[in-house]
Image (cartoon, rainbow, N blue to C red; front, side, top):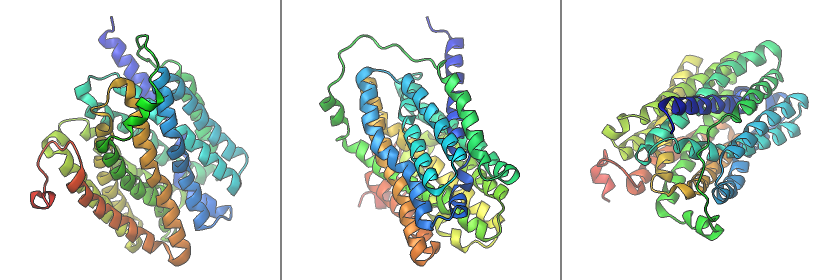
Length: 398
């Protein structure tokens, strides 16, 4: 019999591994585009390096989800993912060059692809009707790791040099890897492995495609701004390496708080569709005003508001991606969802980087803002599973 103490212990271990895993992947992110510039890379190369993280997830997450569902295991992939997180950090720290950073960040994208298995395993700790709570908490734990990384990464680089955050990431990743062996995984009853054709059919579900498409725009906003080129604008208006870390912290703290609130009653009261619409509008406007900020306090405010918007959107979409999917197919559904939204993680920084090399970053930030507003409109028309009427009923019926 599984006791309440057993459940709490399993929950705690999962949370700890998730925090360490994301810390290892993100501790150097606050200084990454600036580091690429320091090594001699162009804006286009910086965009490619930031985007390579999303590209690898886009390529790997679907087959990874199918493989996990076929064998009925999640934990082994989690351990592999944490190991790759520490390995990629170590590679970039030991061999500092533009090409090595590209390879290392790509490997970290492979590591992040295993988040499919994290989220599906964690959802198994909850009853089916608690999908929103599970999704919100999983996103919250991931963001705690990213927040800790953001708050320390820039200051570590400032105090000990550009390579220091990579070594810290590797050390923290080692701790997460060792602890991952203690994660509790539900034993599945013996069953025939699902056919690949059955699992592939999951990706044809209309609702899954809709929420995944909306998630592309969310990740575009995130990786074109907070994890992409906002730090370069911050440096241009006088930010130090430590202040770049603070910028990422300020961007992510509202995301984490919003994700935590979406695991409770707030979204039920507001309505899923309403929350996502306003999240897109807020995130889009925050991105559009970045190039017009002339001081760090102004920039901090815009990034906090943008983070709040993105933090409301993402857990809702993640929960909807698997809400009605049977347990034995959830890793596949989550793999499709995360692979499709990775297009925004890759395309956002790549496109904004190209625009930046041609005409400056202002056009890229304005495009990002426009896509946020478009995301709000698409949500009104197409988002499934809204628990209340739209905030704009006249528009939603057109």
